[in-house]
Length: 168
Image (cartoon, rainbow, N blue to C red; front, side, top):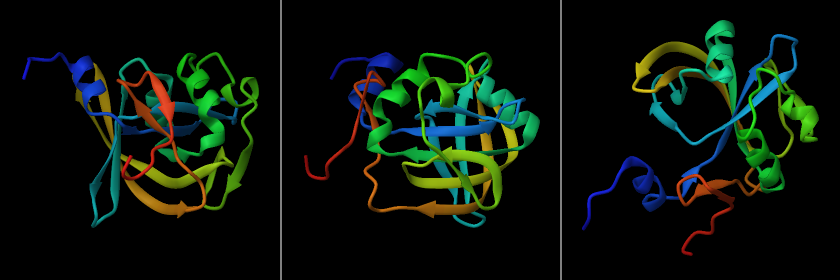
């Protein structure tokens, strides 16, 4: 074994579930931020958390509005997800720029990608500073899923986006 830095460790422990954290932009449209720093936190009550960089527009939006939808994007969004990660929602309408088909979601006024395997409608409960990120601890209000959609994972230290196959 050799000693690794954190970036080398992320490549060694791939794949990581890839999500799109959907928040409401100031103009009412949806901002999409690809994040892998997402984890279930509690079964009772059902809670999930995600970490976003301290300067991130997504973190700012969820702290201002108190809500988000965590979407697990489907395979058709592979290129769009990579493109979303290369720009900020503070000055880019990623949905429009990358041609992402969106849909309304009962119980939320935040639109979500139509091609999603799972959707978690959440309310922000607490924000905790963790190094260069903020951990957003959220209570899950509703979960929707579609087993027929293949979801995406980040591989090789978040440099490759692809589906995964069990046993491969």
